[in-house]
Length: 154
Image (cartoon, rainbow, N blue to C red; front, side, top):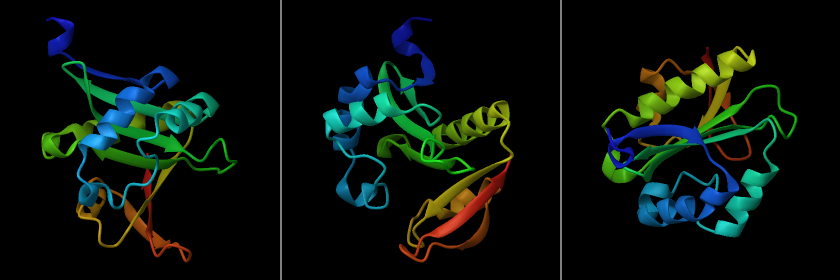
């Protein structure tokens, strides 16, 4: 199979900042309204990826195009549990990329020796049902944002 017809999951590097910025700009603002992990500023994205030590930022590429990003972060900031973030390109929703990213994140966490993932979601986020379907359980609400806090045992 030629590389441009393949699916690839790999760590994101500072050199990917332009691809990530373009990926972010492709998404409609309404679709991104609950995703504020990073924007489309390529220099800021590059700096964030350069600074990552224990945090993990990964991308899913289809036919050489970035179609999803997921990360496990907070470890570099001293948190005990990694916090999961995911974003699938809008036109690829419902094709299984989210499940692939969640399963990959669970494997990364297991291999690192952790037992649980944390996630936060705005109560109006349409993706909330996916967290429940994938086994996340609600444990509380973040007072400063009103976001629901979820845990997933891995």
